[in-house]
Amino acid sequence: MKTAIYPGSFDPITLGHMDVIGRAAQCFDRVIVCVMVNCEKKHHMFTAQQRVDMVRRAVAGFPNVEASSWDGLLADFAVKEQANILVKGVRNGSDFDMEYQMALINKGICPTLETVLFPASADYIHFSSTMAREMIRYHQNLEKYVPASVVEELKGR
Ligand code: PNS
Image (cartoon, rainbow, N blue to C red; front, side, top):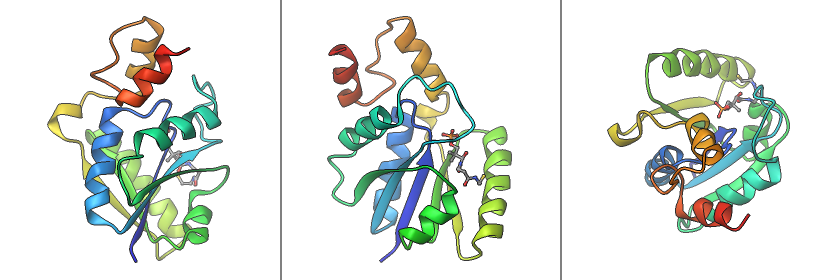
């Protein structure tokens, strides 16, 4: 069974993330979308629990995708889940530089851990959680940026 982990802040999950999740779900038997709790972006708009809940609802339609969270080293989570693949999305050269570095670091920690990079689909190349947060702050129409379940949840607040 090929288990892949898609880690990130997901603050909030966007349609760009969903595109990567859908594609990863076709490549691997099991995909765990892992909300990293203590990553460097300290000023989250949503709590870890809210981010996990949003991810869980968003991936509910994929039978082989689950949501989880981890407060620690990603490589340790991969070992715990018996996963040897990390999935990341890349939109541009800066993303690639960053992801290449992280891939080397993760492989240095756990030599069996491979990073698979998915190039962003053209429709989502300009998407980011930062942009989604701005749209939320300024009460813009969110349908184009985040999954419908996130739009619904935000409307309810
Ligand atoms: O969505 P983000 O914020 O770009 O995701 C970055 C993330 C959380 C995937 C990265 O910072 C990470 O893997 N953090 C976990 C801590 C860790 O394992 N660090 C070593 C690898 S760089």
